[in-house]
Length: 457
Ligand SMILES: Cc1ncc(COP(=O)(O)O)c(C=O)c1O
View 1 (cartoon, helix red, strand yellow):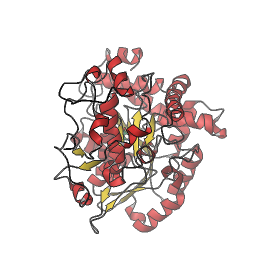
View 2: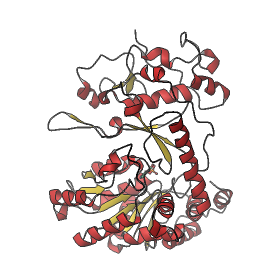
View 3: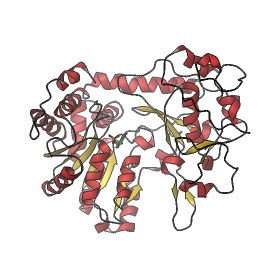
View 4: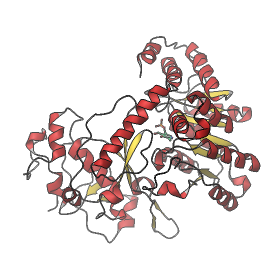
């Protein structure tokens, strides 16, 4: 957070209801979004749960460009069906297009035809599209989806987590937005929708917070009942007054185009360096993260051995770099009817850059020989996903905290960390420090996990 946000924390008004900070927060959200009703929540996923538990009936469908994992989980938790309707290019990691977050209207038509009008209580649009590579949505596409929703009488909601980054991309990539300020572009998006959910940990630049905003008075009343039950009173929603103040200030600061240029530029430069080193990444580079393409990075690991999760674990073990798997582990589903696994098209590892903080030195990309030695990961015994992998090679070693175990006889040497890397003893001999392990030895990082990945016998 900025100094101004931390200063705001010092003027927290912790009275139970209608604290001064809420009044300020509400005014800022209203000014930026134009939405009349503002309900704070402690995170984005809480906003999603309050919304979906209020509007969904069992079996309802919720189209989105691509649901973020918490959004999908909250739809499914409330017995709905999450439908991804992004244009096909979103699933092609090499398609270098300016607005890969766009929704395909033909897919919306299909979702509606399959469900029937009364079973689609709202359409969502995630800006930027996190699970599809942090890719922006164009204003033109938001306009088309908004018109589609109006035509069918369906409310349109934004998952506005990165509304400012999305506006920045429109400014630099969409000719119609070139002369507009970030605030004007963001407002043009909000004006097309009926409301939004927000994780303030993203484009409100805070450590905790979120909100729902809407123009629908009746819905706002129903949401406030759920909010009081799940989060807290309507003027604090699970937060302290000081958090509301930090959010209000962050929402104003994020609209600074110079900040956005710096942030998006940092991430782009990281992506360019990885590309220059021959690391396969999803293109173009997204707003808040670089996404490694695990399918091309580890072509020898089949999807049912979770290549993106294997890469995520290896990155952490070797370099202390914590990424997130966005692939079969996050989105693979077991078809209840056929008993078959349904796999997502992409196997990605997201390397998200915290706002205003990014390590300057990118880890050296692995050499091909090292990559080929990486193991796949298999579901641990007892995991529901284990069934889907029945028949593949047996598990080696105990389940780890992730619920996964490393497999493959060739795995152990490549993951071994030499004593010079400051690792705990007992890790066995290593052929010598790998470039990334040596890099870890030079800079402080998160504590290295003591447990070894399961070694082949
Ligand atoms: C697009 C999107 N929606 C929802 C969320 C959930 O927000 P939170 O982590 O605040 O619960 C996130 C978090 O990364 C996100 O990126």
